[in-house]
Length: 430
Image (cartoon, rainbow, N blue to C red):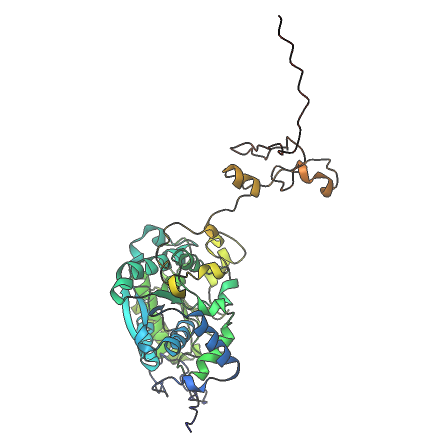
């Protein structure tokens, strides 16, 4: 009788002075050498089996991998379902990836037992990415999935590619990068089965993944306010100063780049520690050494996605890049494989184009505006046929849109309608 392996406890120390970050120099290292898939039980086991069902038919899978808890959990569950020899971790490498995150991603992949393939990306050369608007993440992910499709899929003989979007991410408006995943038909098993962020962390704990409680770590470009150009020099400054913050033993941080000012965000419970003379002097010296003229501490504490939420949080620019995943996002091929159409989509999906009304779609026009209401209008139910885009018209000449449609709507008479009476033909003269 085989014994069930138990998850390894991932305690990082209880003393207040103990470093709590995986990046702190005093961190004791991982307490686990390999994951424990046999320890899954209860809801975590059901979720893992659901992911396995989503990946049924895939022979070899590539996972867009960053080393965070979402992508690491998906990578581990894919290895559990398909075997380590049939799963490849695809790590995008560019100046926007912090050096510490790159090192950590390799360490976590060794615990999972998966091969890591680094994919160089060049989003920094794209002017649309450099201008740093609300669609920046879209261009970044689009570059990653394009490089994977062109350089890696054939070389690694991949049937499909997946990434670690969870069910909570699918409801957020500050995730324009998901539009790129939709365009390239990338699988999202965690989101499809409804696995939330808290459930992802619980599954990761039972798998003994070292990043089970790791805070979110967006790319370095997210520290630059929208509208300010993203440059390699700015990314280097952010990376260097954040390394210096972690060296002081803080559990998490963000360095926001405001030109000559480097604004450090820390967890609110750790703010008093930043005011200790030795630590404060070390942070100021590190900031000036990296090129900032001034170094400040944000009293509001750390706020993930601060700049994104200011623009896209309530349906602003860039919200057209997002949509919730559906069954159509899971391409299928012969034998149930989800690979044959994974990399054949070249046109933007319907989700990134304005959806016209039904009457306009039939007329092949582009009218997407609602009709202008009249001053004195009867009850709505009595005027359904008076609207340009009515689905059940009863009048032959509906009121046009404002502005007018490019193609006027034509109402055809039903075949059963006799039409107006015809004038009798005059008899021919003999």
